[in-house]
Length: 349
Image 1 (cartoon, rainbow, N blue to C red):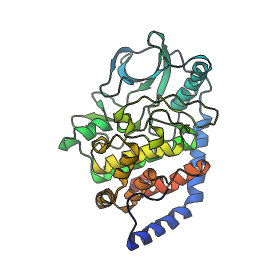
Image 2 (tube, one colour):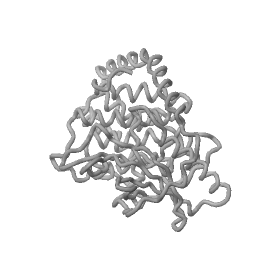
Image 3 (tube, rainbow, N blue to C red):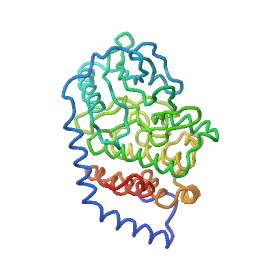
Image 4 (tube, rainbow, N blue to C red):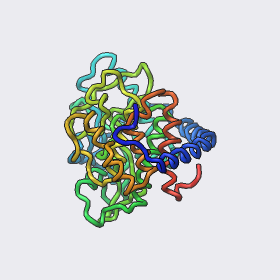
């Protein structure tokens, strides 16, 4: 699919070509380093079931998560519980889901994990039989008197003291892209990337922007042909982040490119610092055109720079909807590395 809504000018074309050549020259180093990181991570998978974890006490549903997330206590420590409903599953699918739970919990429990994989530590999961749902228990990102806020809440009501600097926005975008890159490389589809599922610790107006945690793994699954996909819950607020072919139950299955599209919507929100829902037209195809139209391209290039704009557009315009096997490497080079250039302290690979 060609780029939607605009054509690069002469100077920008030259800049784009130079950046592409530079990124390609890094390919061998990046691939080798990432392979080492992933190999170490996968080697430390527990290899055992983490089911049967005790249900935390005093669980309270978090507002705005459609009942998908609760907070409670594990002893004297705050924990987060993500719910995975299984009421509609029967027979073989229900049995297979139990095995998938073990694999998912194991992946999110493994330590040490790459520093760039910004996910919370999973302590285990339990079966809430009365409500026909599984609860995955995670350590809270907050400590002491800190609280937790989602990116969605920060976008909706951003008082001046909670607005991130330009540099913090670059850092946030890079870290979310790097987390997705690792998930793509180890063969997992997230299926729930949205601002509601990016969490920060905060205290008295001070948000820990350098540590964004991606959660919301309720519908995550291994990226394998024989894996079944659970039907996504219908919500206009959540459909905003879904690819036009992933609205509800995608007929052709779920693909890596769909998670990348969701990241592109997040990149738009980080650049404009407002919820993308304000532009939602109830038509996913028309909404994608709106995000990519020329006036928005100019706006984001002005506020975040050309490299950031190009990374966002590649996520949104179908650039990764081709060869799925090459997607993780291409995403690392063309998106993650481009964003890393805006964060010098991220260091070399």
